[in-house]
Image (tube, rainbow, N blue to C red; front, side, top):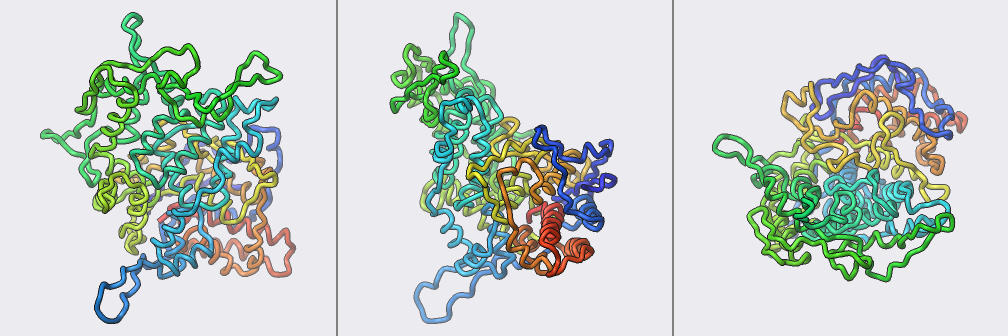
Length: 631
């Protein structure tokens, strides 16, 4: 286990000073990943030795240089030599395996040697296009249906959310569409719906339908995505559009304002007016200018009234054998977009859409306007607001590339949002390509810039581990539970945000750090404290060696790594490339190599000793600061 005397976490984004975390009592109980389950009484695997323990303290818990590993940025191939005519377009091509891995790990969920070969052959954009244009593989709907999670039986899946966790881990840990899934995951942290909320009946189907929506619309148009999110049943339940009723003067009831507020604050325009480069616009007194006020919230809230489940498609009902008085609709009800059309509601539901005048953001919807036209006007108004490009664009840069993009970077992405070059606004494929292919993202200089990069989210580290080393499910159902517990598990689980404000805020700055002194943002550091710093190391140790109960259905053989385990440099070369995109510093590599060489594993060592050595090597890389900060 980790050395509990010296636990620290580096102020990664800044690259110079430590964020000291020494407030705990230092007890072993606070360090170990005790699971809240009878299954979790097994011993932690003995994969470390004294040298490895010292290395963990050095790598994960003390100052280390951010970056390392070099790389020369995205170099352009030289133009062909020859006669006249239009010159061939410049193709940006990675000039090394490290550059290719660096790009793939931003754009997707992991990188393979095949990805590197393809990208070096075809260039960044062609590789990205190939990934984007892949057909969607198995959907959440297909997964849940295949494994019986939408069956009415004694398991009572109709009230239980764990299958939603199995579904999303299956989606992220396996299969093709890595880039589409990575973008959908980024979108899930912008348009937040959480499976940890009470999603009523068929919660796993509800969250699965939401995931399928994000994955399907990831490279479509922002306007279409915004409306689809608005009408999604899980979103309706999460933010109270579902069942939202018009005002009643007699009782004093007014429409619920929750979604009306959040669709402006979080999903489209933000709190303050922005210039095209994402900087705040100021009034004559030097104060930020608010984008909306309470009257705008009250006005737009009326738009989102009268919505309920849509029973289109002949939804039937069934009573469980053990609960004959419970009338359950089919799970597929949760896949239908909500509707304000009473003919598609259950019988005897009165019209609850507000027909009052609705004024917001300088637009007035006349009284007696129906729900469909009201929604169209509201969506168009939000979509065409000048804030959307910089507000959305900056956050996608933060999720995929760097926490502190320059204003010029934000402006280039926002301009692409406003016009994809063919007069189309909100083209998400163009936007994400602009994010990933920008000069600032590909530049060699960014590796030397202490303000560039971002902390890898815990769930992305876990996903990368599983995909890199070929994890497979014994049952095929990927029975991995919710891993959000910060004390005993990973501290983050996809589609399990604790609130609509995501796992962390885009403007978060860790207090009492050099990052704060320099006015830099470090959103993912909102997940870091003395508990999560220790629990991550312990969680990954037990994950890598297969000792955690959460992986009882998952196995990893590490076959490729075992073939070179007796060659420390070759093993480190492979792990450095596939996990850290070649960014392990010479100091970090030396520390890890010393720990591994101290164990003396050779070609004639036992298979058990070889496997333990592989476990050590992967753990030491994945707790190092050079890995934890993605550059």
